[in-house]
Amino acid sequence: MIGKIFSRGYLLLLLTMLYAPIVVIAVFSFTEAKVLGNWTGFSTGIYESLFSGKNVLIMKSIENTLVIAVIAAAIATVLGSIAAIGIYNMRHRQRRIISFVNNIPMLNPDIITGVSLFLLFVFMGFTQGYTTVTLAHVTFCTPYVVLSVMPRLMQMNPNIYEAALDLGATPFQALRRVIIPEIRPGMISGFILSFTLSIDDFAVTYFTKGSIGLETISTQIYADSRKGGLSPEWRALSTIIFIAVLLLLLIINYRSMKRAHAQQSAVRSK
Image 1 (tube, rainbow, N blue to C red):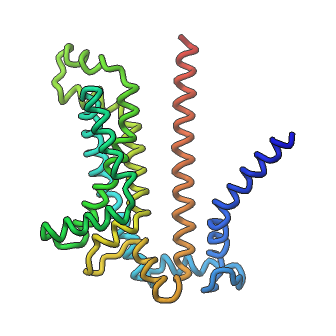
Image 2 (spheres, rainbow, N blue to C red; image 1 turned 30 degrees about the vertical axis):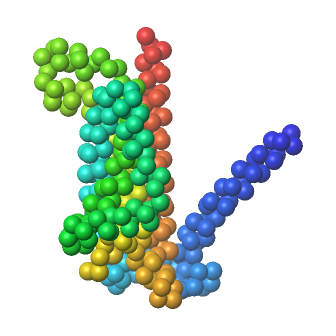
């Protein structure tokens, strides 16, 4: 009994520590006070100011972040899926070695990745801006896509690809109609994860954006904080992002539960 109370109390404390800051930001996004913690009455003025276009820098940073995230996630999904298929078809020893190499960028500190890519782009003479930031995001997102797709390949029946070839399909047709449908959930998960990581990234973006004035949400928040404080509109934006991610997770989990229930029903009917 005591152990059960302790475990529940520990879980409640942990959840409170994780979500209390987000709740505080969400609550104070509905007041116009510039200082967080100073409640001046309920108001949606911060949200109105955010979407009115008055804060040009914030809106531009949102646009840059979303454009880079979508492009980087799409490219990383394609590259990571192709790489996962290639790794899957290797011999066991080679697969283990390449999988280990693929895990290194995920374990490598972001600041090391950012500095390394910065030096690489300078050495190659690339003009820093949208291109270098996008390439950098593709670089650190691709290993996560590989990690998301590989389990789907390992669960796949290895004979269905050969069966498709025996029935007259070309390798490309077998890839498009057999393998891709099997790994599509992993590709979707990899895309969502890459999109989230791209939006969240600061260190790599900071070192590869150059000095042309390109700002993303993370770098713009850093720039604002160095000026003496954050604009109240960031509280509204943080709340919107949190709610959007929460809804996305609920939808994904609901679809997964529905799919699992359908599979169980199909098995029982047999």
